[in-house]
Length: 467
Image 1 (cartoon, rainbow, N blue to C red):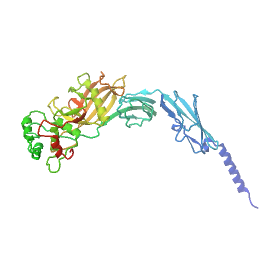
Image 2 (image 1 turned 180 degrees about the horizontal axis):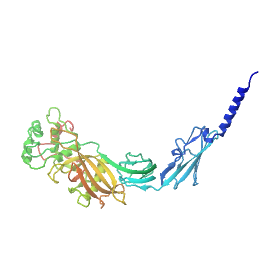
Image 3 (image 1 turned 90 degrees about the horizontal axis):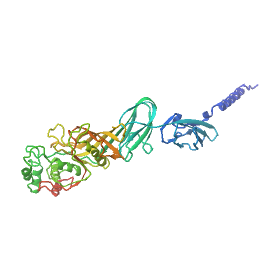
Image 4 (image 1 turned 120 degrees about the vertical axis):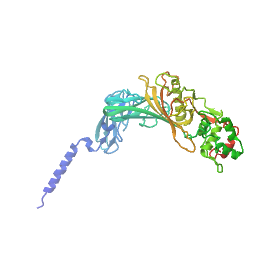
């Protein structure tokens, strides 16, 4: 006789499976919900908007899904998977999800709304627990804002217009104002907002020799030299004129002004085939052509800065700090232009503050720090300035002259307030002893130096890079 015991056992097991299946919680049926931040409490700054739900909000059920959002404060409802909300107080949001099999599941997320706590740009702040913050970026010319914390997660970093900002990226222009962010999952930590502005011209001016007027040094009238080779080519007497009129000079005088103009406005010169001048000697010919007062300077310049050296507190250099920085921002960062400057004496020379050292300023990096207890628009700036260097032939190089300045300035509406009483030019360091005498944007030049035998047309004939 056949036994029915195995079939009986199988039926009992299947019945138990069915009973167990229908006793399982609803969310174990396959609907997985993320109400946002994996259901963890989320902090936002007051007036910020939040997008609820996850990516995706519902999964592992049978599509399509039906969403029903509500809040414990009332007045909020949505059928979207990822609705936007702008709570003004701490609010708990609940979403009920129904799938195509009419299985339902609910999840909640608590949104904590806090008044942003101010932190000062460039200065650490110690906190005991999670919070949201605001920090002021004063300049319209942009830079990189980097938020760091010793603990926790940085969230919801926003531009002043409440759009998302990527931490440490270039802000772009006209983005001055209050930036907000939160630090979550943190206790006993330090938070800091650093802002660094970098400006760089579209080209680097080439390094040059200053072509001294002093006998016994390397001069334009040396034999062999730039002018002796020029005379051999064109049958002129430029070398003897130079020696007669400029030889015998004592001191630091030379052709660095004309050389700096040429380095900014021209390609680095190279001699045509058959003309034996070196690159340095070609540069010397243009240095001579740039020495006459034929330069075209943008009237928007800072000029006549007292040498100092500057010190913390009131001194004659202070009134120039704001305009100096404004011109750096506007022309180097904003327009990508090289600026011409008399950066005064390099270290360790001892000719004093009246010695002229002309260069092309092509790059800078400025680190900002809030300087006032009650005015976030007053900032201390530590700026590193890069200019083309000079050298003595036959050595050629691309080494920069690097100078550091520290000053306090004030912004208004995203631009420097040049008449602010808060200005303080504090210090100078690196390859300089004094403040620069001027900072100018050169728009052009009428090439024609003091030596009547050296002409632009002849120099262009032998210059392969600047025909």
